[in-house]
Amino acid sequence: MVDSETTVHGGPVHENHYCLSEVALFRDLSRREMADLAVHAPLRTVASGQVVYSPQRPTDTLFIIKRGRLRLFRIGPAGQTVTTALLGPGTVFGEVPLIGIRMGGNWAETLEESVLCLMSPQDVRQLLLADPRIAARITEHMEERITELEHRLTDLACKALPERLASTLWTLTKRTPAGSVPEPVRLTHHQLADLVGATRERTTTALGELANHGLIRLHRAKITVTNRDRLLAYADGAGRTPGEQAPSE
Image (cartoon, rainbow, N blue to C red; front, top):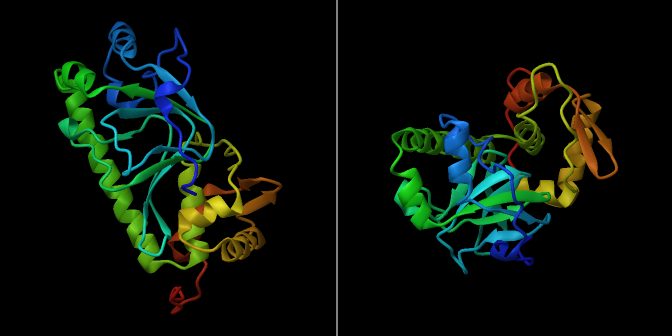
């Protein structure tokens, strides 16, 4: 879904809101330091399904996700999309070589209405690089992103579609507090198909398989994960019989 592109710089600014309060990069800062930094990171609200970063129209802005969820993806020679990362609240992305964050030909698209904070490269240089606490957190963040990318590539290469789908749904609900019921995943079958690299029809069939195993409940326009532990076990191959291999896609 790359036919809808928006320019987030023109959106409304929400005043008196600390954009950075839930971002891991800034968790070592005091409330006063957070407030001073937030002045340089105004908020923008972006509708679902909007491309906020495109290699065709690159920008050197640092994007900080306050609310919502986005995916990073690449477009293959035949027009197919491959999702390389799923990003949620508290994560950052953009083309900011100063702090080692690059898009590398990726696009960024909102999966739901999202609230983003924007920071210019000048503010990144003056406010982020000058603070060793933030610099250390940036290193941690990039290590986590590399690990997540390795997991996604492993899923694409080694897992059957239902397992990839289970892994993706687990990732989409991983911010759920222990002992709590996950919030429903509000994505269409087409959106999920883009995330797991499959057709909508095959994705719908795989969702039915997960539902038959009691791992999810399907409702109109939303999916509820019933047991995250079992879902993760299934994603790791627990649904196979001994000696069975994941079928080739």
